[in-house]
Length: 71
Image (cartoon, rainbow, N blue to C red; front, top):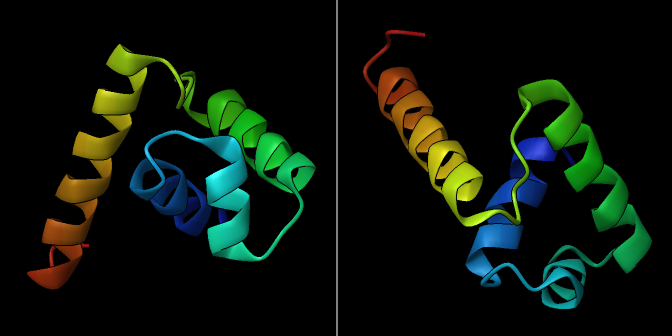
């Protein structure tokens, strides 16, 4: 599983780490590690409401750009 998949699952699970882990069929510590990696790479903490919004918007823009062949 990738970081984007983990971030999607985390948001789909309402930011509940254990629910995210169940969706991905991984241990909660794996989700913690991946969320830390996302924070390290982006400078945004997925569990923070403001940072989470920025990450969601960024993911939506990325998907839109890819679907239109812009990336």
